[in-house]
Length: 305
Image (cartoon, rainbow, N blue to C red; front, side):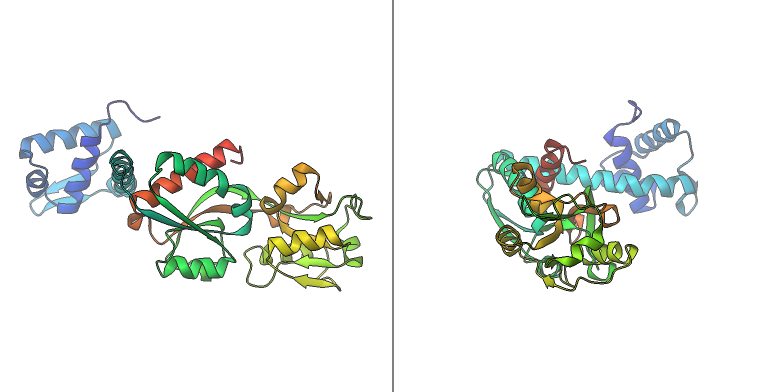
């Protein structure tokens, strides 16, 4: 629990002293007297119960405790700045736009509610949404064509210069039409007798599904159909005896309504984090930051955390 004695002025003064490497210059930057900023720093160190800065003739030197505190203090101040900017933009009714990319599982499950919440918070902002495979959306994020991408954490080599904030964990499901002969099958090897819609190489879930296959002594299905299209997968599963390997979020509504049935096969090895991807948190516009908060609220509402 945060000590009630800790105030924003304490954190602001400490961050500025660390930035300026001088009490005198920090005091000037904050329009304070040097005795006032020295007192603020002393109060902070008393609250923290540790010496954060060593004073010397050359200015100040960070202690180990100071280094730890600064890392989190800087993030906290940046978060406060973004929060205030977002609130100000909403209060002023600023007209703008936000561009969101979503992988299929998020597009079907989280995104509709996140967009609804965001629209209530910023009714004059245009929201642009596009879905697609992980690599395509990350390329568009890195090039600045998207503000945020919501979906599964990708391979390390695809996440260069991309931050990731986890929202929840999701498994892959193996689904079929109601009444399918394998509707109650619990052994993955039985699935090999039927056509299987399988995630393609570029999809975020492919490595996880491959890992599950290897753990079950399998490398592929004889009648494997690779596709990332939710529309195609749903259509083929309902129109034939094909089974569909897909993120649970894509078919959560279908399973709940009884349109599709999840096989009782253990897919725990496919569990992976779903979250929000951005180029850099410091680059987020007020509207993009507000949409991120709307996404967090959507996840909380659906009780996925």
